[in-house]
Image (cartoon, rainbow, N blue to C red):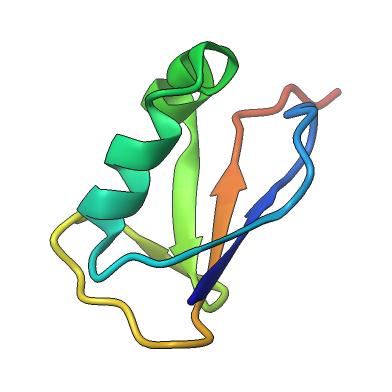
Length: 73
């Protein structure tokens, strides 16, 4: 089981899912119309390290964070 957290303005409660890869997580999350747009623009961190590939294998207890782009001033 992996833990998924949604940061910043993404208004979703954390989820726990069974998934073997980040691609499986993305496929599951893409079924939620509210998350589709965020998934295309957000950075992804696995255990607090930014990643760029969805082909990364996951381990039980991994934490996945979706980090949406933000504006600063």
